[in-house]
Length: 97
Length: 503
Image (cartoon, rainbow over all chains, first blue to last red; front, side):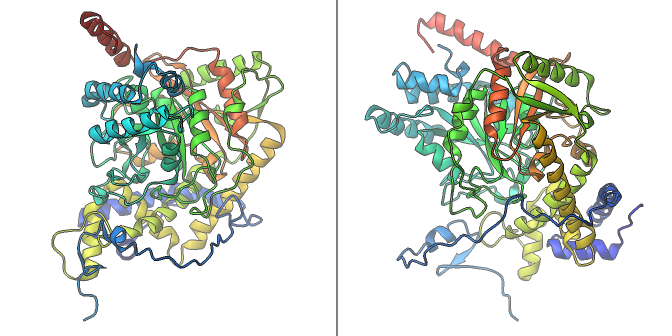
C-alpha cells in the first residue's frame, strides 16, 4: 500500500504545478502526498469497471451565441489589474532569447 | 428597535413599510460590525462609505416604486471569492490581495437587481480550500458562539457575519460543504443549491464541476427568498441550467405530511459525536410527528466519497489556479530572472500551504502515468456515488444527515493535520459530487454551548422539498443567538434608553 514519492517525482510535479519549493517544503510535500495517496488508494477496493467516468453530473453542451461584431474594446478593463503593462499589452519578462 | 436582530425578510418588510430606511439598515449593520469585528473578524473588506451611498440610491428606487422585492434595501455580505466590481476580491489569498474586478458576478448582480446593498466581502479559507477559515492570508475568523473556536469553512466569514448579526444575510460558496458545515458551526441556515442553479460567472473557480454559490441567513424563509433572487439561467456560465421555476418561497410550507425521509445508517455510525447524533435524531422525530415517514437505509459507498472528492477537487484546482501567475492580475514577485522563474516565484510566494498542497496533489493525479489510476478512477467512483443517490431518491423525498461529525473545533486544532480536516467533510462532499441540493439547519447546541446543524439533502432540482422539510422543523424552534450578540443587544438597548431614542 504505502506510496513512496521520489525526489524526481516531487521535482516533476513542482514543474507541472509551477511552484518553487524549498528543501523543507519538498520534504513536507512528499510526506503529505504519500499520506494522501495511501488514503486515496481505498478507491481500489471498489470495482468501477462498469462505470463511465463522470466529469459533470448533467450533460454538458456547447453554448453558442451570435458572433456579433461590436465596437467594445475592453482592453482597459482587461489590463486594469495587470502588475505591469505597456501600450495596451501585459508586460512580461523577455520570453524569446 | 434592534434592527440587526431581524431576519432579512422581516427587515425588507419594514423598509417597504417605511418604518426603517435602507440607510438606517446599513448603518445598523456597520454599527454592529464596529462593535464585534475586532473579536470575530468576519470581513476582509468593509465598504463603509460605498455601502451608505448605495443604500441612499436603493432607497430612492424604493421610494419611486421601481424596487418592490422582499430584499430591497436589505444589507448583504458576499464571500471574497465572488467578484464585485471595483471592490477588492481576494479569495483571502496574498496572490489576489490587490485584485479589484472590473465586473460583478451574476449572482451578485441578481441580488443588486433585487435591491440588495452589498456592505463588504467576507473572510474564507484561501481559495475556499479548508474547513475552518484558518487558511486565510488575512487571519482567522472566530466563531461568534465561542471565540476560541473556528467558524467552520470555507465560508466561515459569511456564516460568522450572519451569526454575529453584522449583516442580515450573506452569500457563500460550497465545493465540498463550504456553506453547510460553517452554517452548522455558527447556528445559521445555509443552502447549497443543485449544481447549475446559480450562475458561477464571477465566482473564482476552485473545483468547477462542484462549486455552487448559495445563501446563508438566520432562517429558512430568508434562504428561500435569497435563492429566489440569485438563481437564474445565465448563458455566461456554460454549466448554468435553465430551470422550470425560480420561486423557492412557495415551498415555505409548515407541514411534512406524506414526506418520505431516508436516514442513511452509514452516516450515523462510529465517528459521529454522540450529542450531534442525539440532536439530529430528535429533530427527525419532530418531522415524523409532523407527518413524515422515516426509514433507515444503507446508502453505501460513503467511505469512498472523500478520496474521490479530493482527487477531483484538487485536479480541477490545479488547472483553475494556473491562471494566477503574476501576469494578468494580482501579486507579482519583486525579483525574477525570466518568465518561468517569475511564474514560479510569484505563485510560491502568493499561495499559502494548503493551496500549494492541493495544487501539487492535483498536478500529480492529472500527470501522465497517474491520470487513469487516480483521476479517472475518482470520476468513475463519482458515477457510482451518483447512482447510489439515484436509488435512494427512488424511495425517499429527502435524506437527512449530519452537516459535520462534531461541533466547531478549537482554533489551531486542524491545521497541524490536514487529513483530519479532510475527514470532517464526510457528510457534505457527496452532495457536491452528485450535484444535489443540501440545506443545513440548526437543531440545538451541545453541552459546550456550540450549535449543531442538521443537513437535509434532496434530489437534483428538488430544493423545494428540502426547504419545506427545513421550514417545518424550524417552525417548532426559536432562533438561538450567540451570547456575544445577546449581550450586545442588551447593551445597545440600555444605551438607547439613556439616549431616549430608538436604534
